[in-house]
Image (cartoon, rainbow, N blue to C red):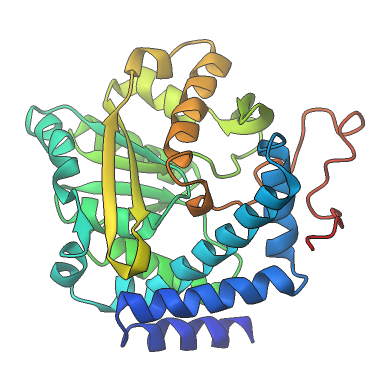
Length: 304
């Protein structure tokens, strides 16, 4: 049933403009906020953990806004998968933000694009692939239809997609050694043994170490990219910032991961609602017994 709903939504959404889709996303987000569901529970637990200083009313407002932005992203999959790429590019302000990446590649040096689940990360992948060769590592979602549409969004402009396994790692190394770009969503759950605990908004979170290993092995330039949704369906704003490769490649992987998480935090704070708070970022705290009260799945605190 979920596959049917997602397929119908994405196919239908491709026929409408952004203002209509964002209105639909707002309505759907409010429904998610008022009807008990896992996305609301996870988002509420994450926001209360990361922003304990916010008052109860401000936390509720951010939870509601984040669910609205999540639904807008889902409706945007229609245009990202079905609209001509030129039409999508006209909606992006700062599309030349990738020029620094392109210039790096022209010098024969590889580039690593790291990004969180912020704004419309699928559109960022499409825009980057239209400018230079890019290999993107991805972890398939559990909903089959969503997986197919996300693959479409990321690959239709020519991006090479690889899975989070040994063959994918070899493909990333090969791309960097050829002087091409790679893309990593660095806030996703890392594989066993491929992470350290590093602070994320003051909370210990499993953070991948793959980026620092690749840096030490291939010495690419590193950029933090993000694409923020503009209000009232006016499009998107792209940002691409060069990061300190020396700090990211530190042999103390916790220091490297802390620096990366801090860079992600700065991007998120530009518009906290556009981060994917429904992702189980703190699913495995370092000490389950002492922090047993923080369990995203079992969090039953009322929203209202």
